Length: 120
Image: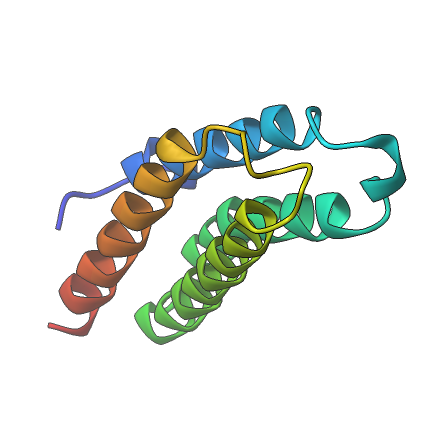
């Protein structure tokens, strides 16, 4: 594994920032009454991905990093589940989820690849 000087050097962290940004842009299209509902849940889950990657990377041990990467993966599962719910709601049926769906899958694969590298 390449040496990194900061979590900001990790491609998976950079992509998770993109995921959070996409999530905020998507929720901007939701009705105002959802600001404290699913919109808030989506934002928290998306922000949690990047935050946990960053926190885990500075904890100092591979075991801790893997633990926080697993939490980040769990946040992706939350985000994906909430997106599926949105797809079934009247306000969300016509929105485009392709980019956020694809990026969340890609990041999750990267997280699991990083966990495997850290464990070996």
